[in-house]
Length: 59
Image (tube, rainbow, N blue to C red):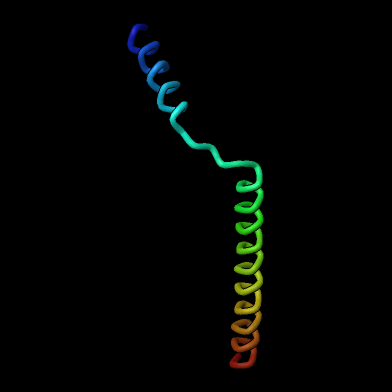
């Protein structure tokens, strides 16, 4: 039990050292991640369409 309390105490101490991002930073990072995901999805969609049409043309 003593080890558990020691562990929790150390975790709390280390978590107090963490620099948390501001709300604006989180929102900006989230927006960038969503835009990049959408761009990659569109790229894969168009490549898939091109490859599909090429395969249908060959067949």
